[in-house]
Length: 188
Image (cartoon, rainbow, N blue to C red):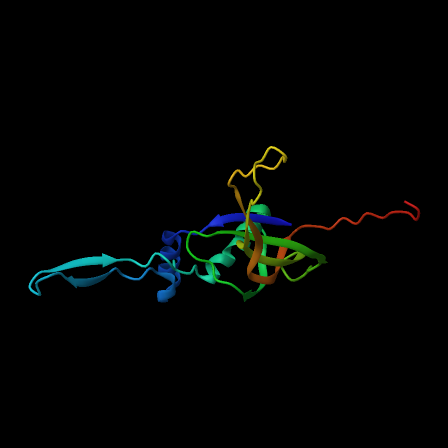
């Protein structure tokens, strides 16, 4: 398998939104709101602004799936996408760490003589984008006493698990590549 780690920033999402034309508001922070709070006299009002930092915008799913192209294009220069299917399971928010992962499941020799495109290898892969999520938080409840070797250092541990955000499969053509088969004799 191969994988790449990435954190998408709001700037990345803004650029992708402009390039793709997808300006869905879920991908962008809400504008600051102004509220008036009145003090003792109704003639004196103070303006305050507030931003909702609790829920950061969602990264475009197709921008996340570009991690697969990153892996194929950088790991195997000259690779050509033939097919990609995607299933979106969980949202990824701006500034969350994610991992794009490609697992090769099948290689098949392609002979295309006479079609002008030559031969090569078709690489079939499972693809996924994952993030780490906190399942539970563990607290150290041990105490420090003279009869015990336990020590309460106040440490907490988070138990994390992989959360699948995108799953799918891909087919990539590797032109002018030949598979080499190794024959083994019985008993080896």
